[in-house]
Length: 548
Image (cartoon, rainbow, N blue to C red; front, top):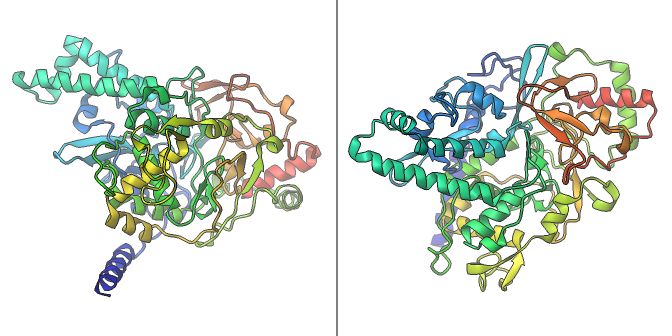
């Protein structure tokens, strides 16, 4: 009885601590703090929440913060973190603010290890903050699809570290900027070499034949390799993460019954916590599976203090509405006609979402792969991925519950086990996160063979190009064409909005990536829904979709 009281007091304290007075939300057109002239849209967040969401760490440790401040690019003396370089890689550059004193781009975080060293890492916002540009205007999109060229960023960081080691003058500038004395430089050189080797091993582990380019990542494939290869120490488990998908928008995601492009992750109960832990482990995290005694879980660098706050902030996020003051007013009659087309032909898969309902509960439609007809690689890779269990063999899938792992297992199950083990290492923090981050959603059954793609509500769809799960269609107008009539090549990375066709402008720009739909994993086939509409109906539907 006494233990029950202690638990109740603990939970009550957690809830009270999480309930502060909300700050006034950001209004349409408000300047982005540190954004160099970019403007915000009203998405339910206040300025402090926005800054927290952009720069809060979940534990990611990419490179010592002091090193990143002074590291030079491999081909010259300019800083690696120079704004022009970061912009070319797809980051959103920022001036210093209280939450971001170094003036690093959106999504760079800092965390301190047990030895007191500050590390720079990447957080959710690096991939899930968007921006569209139109006639000189820049519109920031919280929870939007980022344009980060992740693979190139990682490769160039490794090249810069290698160049620092290989060029005596560059190393002297690096060591001098860090104020490393002569007696410290040998140790510094060894530490830089060790980090370069670690990052290079990760980079080679995730090497693919078809570059991801801007705005895409095979997150599942890289998470699978992090657990099955890196943490388990089994190089034979390596599989090419060659099914890149667009960074999904995050508004409405915490309200859905399932998340991920293939709908493989139920969102009820501990689902969000395990998903967040998995992300934290995969984005320059670590898991020590050898340091495991009994049922006390696995040591990791996951910051459980911040995970619930991140999830709670995302739950309050609203979709961005078409900013008529910048992009032009919508045609009311055409929008009304388009709403009727949507109700007739689209809503059965893409449910409507009321952005103003803070407790909305949404159900995603799951369309079998053979019906939707889009590129199958993401679904097929997920289903086919099996790995040797290694040190996990003989342990229960859910750490405390579930069947025992044999010599081989579905890689997704190994990942869930790793995330549950990391959470078990911090049981009070995990309980706190589950309590604070808990929100009611429609309960979905766990499907061990998710052979389908998820159709989400289309709130803010005007701001989430390119389209389809793999980003293979640049505009909604293209998506309404028959698949064999859609553009085969286009450029991604400029962020320039095509307001008429609703999507990304496809002309070549200085740092854009060429998207070739004929390459493996890049198919723009399928989703033939709406392609038989008349030209007038398509225009009406586009006008309505702008209003969502």
